[in-house]
Amino acid sequence: MHHYIYAQAAGGSGSLKTGLGIALGIVMAIAFIYGVLLIIGGVSKLRDGDATGKMGIVAGVVLAAAVAIMTALYAAFGLSGSTITPGSF
Image (cartoon, rainbow, N blue to C red; front, side, top):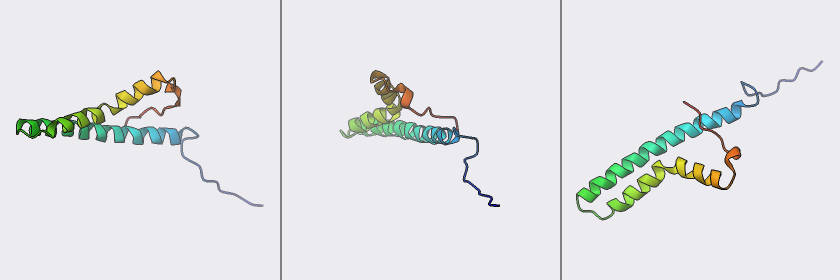
């Protein structure tokens, strides 16, 4: 008699999607914090008279708002059902 051991993810079939959602939430939190830091750095450069501060502010806003931008694009094109919802971490 043969006993086979199969690799299984704990928690059933939804655990991979749950894990990806948690990982996505962590990445989004880090990107938001980095975006805010870019905005602060851009304002500091503008205050010192450096013209490159404007691009830092724009890059920070786009990075911090990336989740809202992508959510709007997915909803506009009718793809909102094909996304992974970020989980809490």
